[in-house]
Image (cartoon, rainbow, N blue to C red):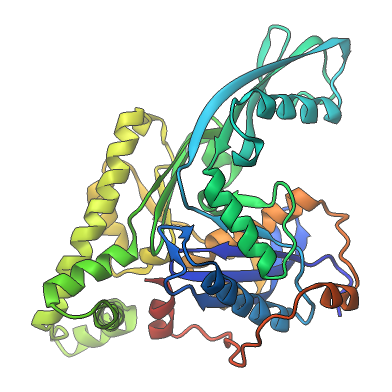
Length: 425
């Protein structure tokens, strides 16, 4: 059993729960030692918990898988979510220094002051994110610690969520036998950005778009700091509903047809298949249903990306995004995603984000786009708890945690194409 601190996270999506555990190797590298998933069924709608018992069961199954892989119990977690009304606003806060050196405690004080200035319940405030600092008349300071002045002003972005949504989320995590402390709730697009974006990306301007099962999340960074965050109640689930209407089948059958069709199209588009088709001077057959499925899926995807493009135009940030748009989330594994998204989001450059440079260990499984926010949560855990984080002894953690229902089926580390689609879309 490793003596290194084990950081753990639960990523609560509309269609599945992801539990991940890992060790921090350095500032920009994590060793992933445990990864578990479980479908949420009808427990969540658009990222919001509407069935606590079902959500608890899904969380327990995912956590059990992750801790069995890790060989150590999981007790304390950070939790990623994207549900309810999310509001972000800029705030400026000033404290007196009286011509002395800025200490880390001053940074904590000014951020806490920003929280208290928001005329809303503290339970609603999720993040207070520094954008820049000013000491006396010197502005745009990224880190003022060690500098001297008469006053310190912080320009921060305060993000708050629905008090009801957050209360139900906390209750669900507690009923799962997990420990959740102040600061351990993280918005999924911020977590995805933590795993996928570099400081250079944020400085030059970039938008990260996380397209999941039930929601699409947008985070925009300009001049090195968060400029805006948005969430839209559309995702892979809407594609399935559209398909059920068009094909006149149940949603369960529509989901099966969608998964099978997208899997076949991906295989046809793979380099091996394309090469084989070229050698035989023939293109793979395209059935009428396959064409119909792709038309329905792409129509909904175009609508989702169109909403993102319109939002960026309304914020007047397009010209400031020199790094363009980074796509992530389960839906971006669809066939021909880049050229399709490029048409909708033009003139912005479009790429699909990858966590490969940021992880080792269970790389082949954790590298898929739908796990990006979960990997980012590990970095949030390390940032929140510190490198000196010490866990309770395994025996004590097991004794204190309520017994979780056992899930006899543990996911393997293989990443077969069809199984991947069953999880992400």
